[in-house]
Length: 550
Image (cartoon, rainbow, N blue to C red; front, side, top):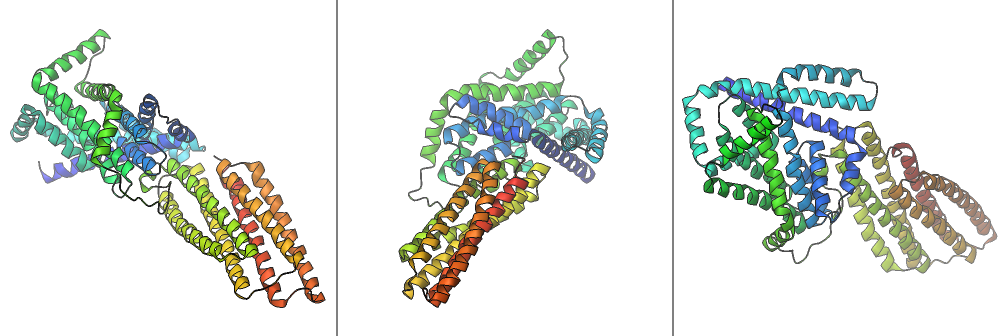
């Protein structure tokens, strides 16, 4: 193969992968909430898991992305190991949709699809129209890449060296599996390696018998991505990735054993698919035959091993034992592995924000108790919570920044902007609580005294602050616009209380009922409590303005 042929092949492969991703992005944006709802259907029912895995992979056009996402869900504790293996089995079936698509003889229509896609994307007025244009663009670019690869590899069918190498791989199914695994690992996409395989088969550079073992190797190669993504995760997530590999390896080697026991098995499969097509009055191309083999293998493999999910769980559990101590540090829900599916990543960010909001709620309660009960232990507890909140803010902002660099729908852009405002508001609530705790320390250290009226006023301010913070967590969790508007009403009352209590304090100060030093602390507490209300109001506005799309 000359240098020019190599660059043409790599260029065609690049177009193919880029087109596939664009089509997947467009489909994902078009699906929108439906994709997220599909993921929420996960139950302990393994059949439901298989169906969800199939559906999600068919939408995002990547079994690797699905399995990486599954590892992230398991790592976040949102999915059990048994559920994850069912979804992974479904992902293997879903990825065959791409091969079926490739097998259609549509390369002559690639520029038609690009032209239609470009028109819809550039001139479409509605978002759905633009998303549909992206799907058509991806579709056209995918087939343009496939056509380029076919034309580039056409001379290989007359190459004696290539024919001799393929004969060796064809005579040894194990070598074919190794080749298929290596191809998929290199391009990081089983669909792309199958696209190359279908191109070689369609130009008669290889035979169907040679292609089948290589196809099986593709199924092993695609598990490498999930294994790499599990590095740095908890034990359960590692087990999920290992379960994916074991499932695919078991299926592949079951078929390989059958190839050795029944040497004519590929020929029998070929005759079966030709006979089936003739029965329906259809001609079958070599590419379609390989695509059907890919689908049949993954469906049969799932049916074969689905009853043994429990056994697979036991095997991976014994291979990857639980660590003695697994500290829950940092984030609980968000995971870098989910960024390839921005809508899902934003859903997980929302859950992390709710968790962060609950921590800020705890900090406000501890601030109140530390001040009124003069408890220094509560001050120390609050400072620990504040460190966690600050760490979460940095991590979430960085995560949202990474998501913003992805291809996002307008709804997701609005959600992302809302979450950026919310994370800042929640962190500021924590800061105000910490300020109050420091005032509590000062009060304890200097043994400051307050009048009964001042204590009653502080208690009531805290009562309203706790009410509004608790409501803010509910608003974020439920996206309830009525409760968001109620926050705005409560915040107005807090502002009025702060103003009234400030005036009452000045009167007490003039009457000599309050010490000046205590008065300064009192006013600072009122100010920080009022600021809590302000920050929660910012959260409510973000829900009303940016998150209505949910």
